[in-house]
Structure formats: C-alpha cells, structure tokens
Amino acid sequence: MDRMMQRRADRAQQYRGRSDPETLEYENILRRDPCSYLCGCDATCTDHIMPRIEGGPDHWSNFTASCQRHNGFKGSKSLLEYLLAQLAR
Image (cartoon, rainbow, N blue to C red; front, top):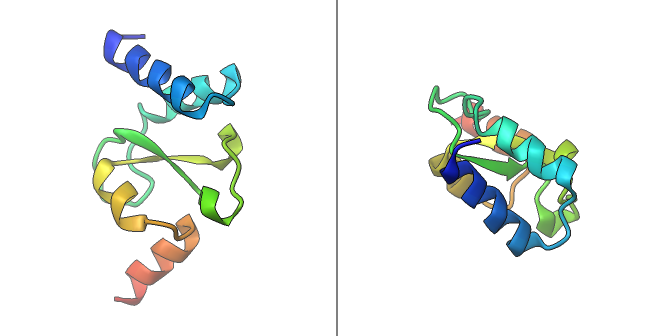
C-alpha cells in the first residue's frame, strides 16, 4: 500500500474510531475501483450506500467507490435515490 493510501486509512481510523480492520481494508480496495456513479472517473474516496444520517453503518457492506465530485453531490441521499434522480433529469 502506498503512503498516501496508508495516510487515508490512518485518518479514516482516527475519524471513525470504530471501524474494524476488515472495513478499512475494503475501503482501500474500493479506492482502486472506478466511481460507482457511472461518470468514468477513478474513485478517490468511498461513500456510504445508505447514508449514516439515515442509519447506514460504518461497515464495508455499506461502502461503494466514489469520486470526490459525486460523493459531495450525493449528500444524504442513498446511492439508489441519487442515481434515480440523475436518470430523471
């Protein structure tokens, strides 16, 4: 793992304080994937599929790969809600 990814993992661990090692490893794997929002960009971060504000857990099963742009645009919507809203435009 390169230094930048290790720093991100360390920051994520400090921020969450409750993430298990399995979740942190899954986050690092997702960052190598393309963005789940179908923009074609490389994923630079992970995003919660079901937002934490709506009870989504900080667990690997609730993460998806995302570019920074879409992670910010999605806000507190679920992944499905966001994608359906984009299709409706």
